Image (tube, rainbow, N blue to C red; front, side, top):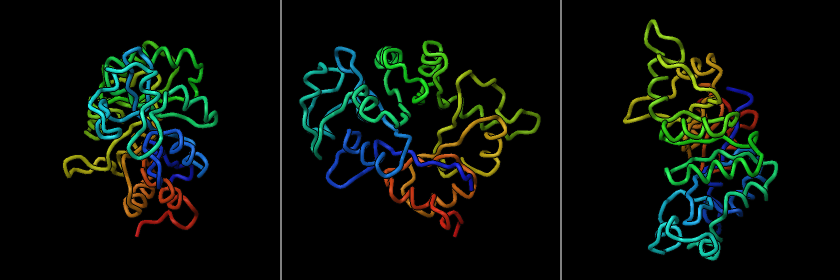
Amino acid sequence: MNSQAEIIAHRGGLWPGMSENTLEAFTAAHRAGVTWMETDVHASADGVLFAAHDAALDRIAGRPQRIRDLRARELDSIELTAGGRLPRLTTLIEALPEARWNIDVKAAHSIAPMVRTARSLHVDHRLRLASFSTSTLQTLREALPGVRTSFGTLETALFALGSLPGLPDHGPASLPAGLDALQVPMSFKSLPVVTRDFVARAHRAGLEVHVWTINDSASMRILLDRGVDAIVTDDVMLGLAQLAPGNNQTR
């Protein structure tokens, strides 16, 4: 087990009486002892970033609009179905000054607002930017040198090729500056992704391995036994319990 392994609170975690991706949820995770928070962001019509997984408001607020269709002031007033309100990213970062933020930039129209927000807050050391889109990540890396990022889908696939004979641990492509973590599922289409070799190659290349989204103790123990650096989970308390001494062996 990696003695420095961490729990990353997925959307702040799921807590009784709280909506995902709210200040209340992230505050609960931080009080429980979590440093790294995961959230997705979408930009409002006037370019303000809000913490939300979905582009649309129907699932979380019972409204037909998309976040990008409404201005920030209107989004500020929307009550979420499970309680709380949609938070601005700046509000979260400022309200929890000791927390760190793993931010998934979901859509192209959110790239420029993400760059503006990062530049205005001067909190590069507290951010890791993520996206499935390698092109989105490339744009963010160019605009925000020094901000750490995870791998995009294509970059992850190229890294996986590093298990082939004759290739370096990181695969056939060079690693971009600022890249610090592979954020991957435990398996993909029934094929294992996070093997001992995968984790070992990542560590030799100076990279961390974070696995999403794991909500059962058996999988958590397996992953910790393989040496992963972080587990992304909705069940923050379960995850923290697996990091406790005596709970680091597979069964």
